[in-house]
Length: 389
Ligand code: APR
Ligand code: PHB
Image (cartoon, rainbow, N blue to C red; front, side, top):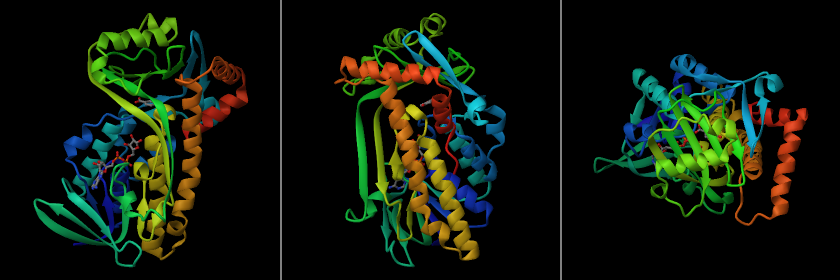
């Protein structure tokens, strides 16, 4: 088999790239290790920058999102019982959009299937060959047979644990990593959100976040120890702890109920450089991870796809190499700024195990400065809604 762009990974990055390229008449094949249902069973974040929303529109998959999403003009930041709001739209002219990654991925799958796009599920042992030549190809196993696909370009959209990044020789890539000494315990519950906007909350007992998917579905997180397991946290323990970490006026009106999902995610910052090796291009989680505090995971994947999509279209349709030659440099320039923002928010709002009283005072002083300073709020808002592509 042969295709113009072989995409490894059928998560949001791979599907969005495939859908955008299809709109330009460029042929792709997507190889996905799991089943569609498995991919759609993952609960992930759901805050979209407007740049991402625009890409979804360009890809022709924004209809349901435009109908069902929630537009958020700001967010609440709390420190103990003190709280203030940062107005994104006032500072930047742009809100953010709340639409779950699961729904967005479902829309992308539906659109690819409706257009007859080729997605091969449950592939094993994917291997990339001759990436630094003009004739790269990929081998994989499906139903006990080994198969080969030749391609002009390969997009590595296979997440943090994928094969694409690992295919780049260790002496070519440089990895940067920071592991945080805590995790996030998250629950999904069929209860109305405690507030119509997100609440990012710092407290003596640790960080918490009140988020949502819609009017009847809430997503809450509390900072937890890395040695905790979800089984250590009954729903009752979770709700009691959350109430202790958010301002009293929210705690008193929080509606609780049984959790329909409960999991713990570790927090990590990670970047690999470069994001290109010959004809292989890394996108999304395959190249970088951010801690979830700034809601940048999905959004950084989207900006990679924006740069790669434009680069591939210019090369394939017009023979112009500039976009793909500068892909890694452009994508990384934006990624590092999103890494910095996510790291800053994480450091500002969490309790660290080795933190001194002085360190806690520094966090409080920074939060007080943010509360009282218009320029600091504007800086936060610009980063949160997303820096320009
Ligand atoms: N072969 C084929 N598919 C693979 C392989 C492999 N060797 N390894 C992983 N995959 C698939 C995974 O099963 C998954 O469906 O690649 C997909 C990668 O999807 P994600 O991990 O969701 O990564 P990405 O598409 O880059 O999405 C952006 O950023 O912060 C996150 O929550 C955010 O998941 C979102 C991500
Ligand atoms: C979520 O709703 O899951 C969510 C929202 C904002 C974040 C992280 C996660 O910063």
